Structures are given as structure tokens and as C-alpha cells.
Image 1 (cartoon, one colour):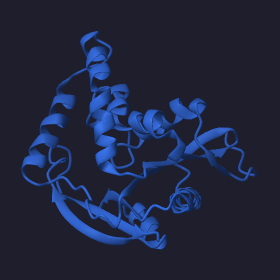
Image 2 (tube, helix red, strand yellow):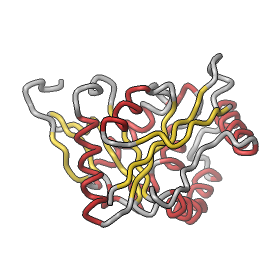
Image 3 (cartoon, helix red, strand yellow):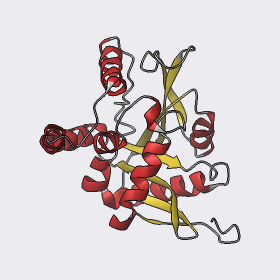
Image 4 (tube, one colour):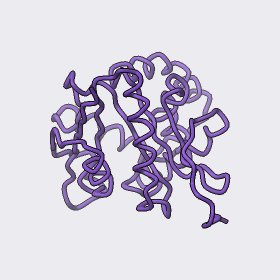
Length: 220
């Protein structure tokens, strides 16, 4: 049970936090809802999406802790998406090995997810901020029930302060127009909207269209 009297703390990520961070990532992957709405295996989803940050860039991650439980995180890479992509490619043989050994469940939802992302990429429906003024990236997440309490702002402030100490020029983040809370968080922290792009990624699941929103903030 959450201790409402305990003030949540923001601290550096540690290896013991890995399972909790991966769980939050999967539990909020579908517009704040669990990933199983559009993907079959949450372990595969986490291995492809967040594990690279926990393995290759753990020194750039923070967690929010309340009553001994990790309830949110912020992580990223000062060198940005290109550095993350190279690490993902380097780790792909291990993921494929686990796939061949039957460690993951592959079903219709997973195949549809990969097809929809490939189709979106071919149609220019994915968004990657490549402006050199905003080289670092970030991802931030909170468990349901812990949003709207200022924890997101505190996590974000810790990460931005860290990037500033490293001398990083700027940082970017991507969210969607279905996550107005994230947009408000970034705008409050001094980010500005860099680009809005319509995407067909979730066309199988949602009747209305979705736009990706790219935000950036200079730090120097």
C-alpha cells in the first residue's frame, strides 16, 4: 500500500530498479495503458524498447520512489537517437537468439505492430528529431495514480540538470497528441514544439488519427 505521508524521492537509477522500470514501461505503453493492447509479449517489447537505456546508458537515468516502490522514471542518452540505434543493433543478435529459443510469444498483435511501424516509416509517419540544437533525448513515465502530483516535473528537472552539468547543448522528446499531460509537462519545463506529424501507427486500434509531437529545449 502506498504511504501517502511519505514524500516521494527522486534518485539515480540502480540495477535493482530494472524490473520495476521495465514493468512501468510495459504497463503504460499504449497511451497510458498496458502494452498487451497491441503487442503480445511485454518482455520482448521491453527488450526492444527500454532495455538498451538500462544496459548502455544507466548513468543517465533517474527513478521516483514512494514507500520503497519505483513509481516513475526518466532516462535518455546525451548523444541522442543515433547512439541508441547503434546500441540496439549491437544487441539484436541476443534478442534474436532468445526469439529462436522460444523465449518470446509472437502472435498477430506483434506482427501487426511491426507491419504498422514499417508502413508508417515508409510513409514518413515516424518522427525523429535531428536538429543539432537538441542532441540528447529523453523518455519519462509514471505509474497510473502517480501522475499530476509533480513527480514528472521533479524527474525531468533532475535529468535536465544532469545534462546541463555534462555540457549538453539541448534535449528533445517525442510524445503524441493523445498525451496532453506530457505536452504540458514539457511546455512548463521550457520546451517548445518543434514538429507535429500525423502517423498511421495505431490505425488498427483507434478510429481517430494520432499526431506525433516533437519537443525541444536548448540547455546552453
